[in-house]
Image (cartoon, rainbow, N blue to C red; front, side, top):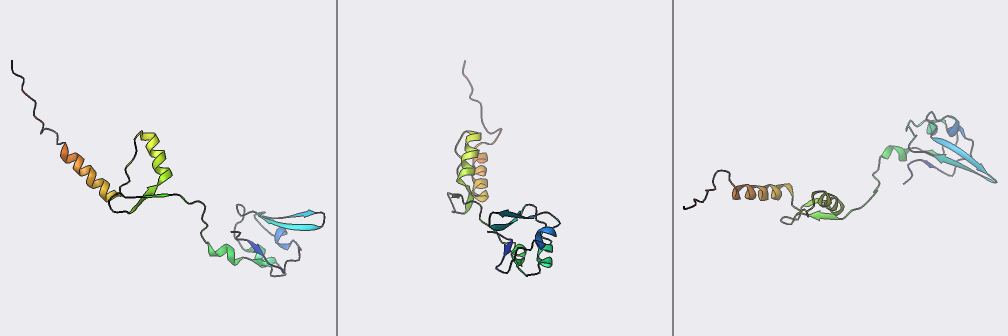
Length: 134
């Protein structure tokens, strides 16, 4: 989604380009066309372009909304017990490769319960040594 928008009232006067303190606006003239360019990474969102435009062609309100853009969608793994979202499939693959075993998708509550069962199964000092007869 483009946050910086110019409507049909733009007449190409370049007041916005000449007055942008961040050099986030530029113009490219080719054969029979002038194209206005905006670089969001440089834009300071100061609104100066909007203020200086004599045609009211800059629609600055889109810069102020701060809408969220979807940048990627990943498969989600859910807890084997309660079906709560736990982590993504690519995250599981990355971690599983590093630890060299497949992680079981469990939410923090059920992982803690499983860890508690594992600790209960082995209590230090409770194991007896078998006595060896001579």
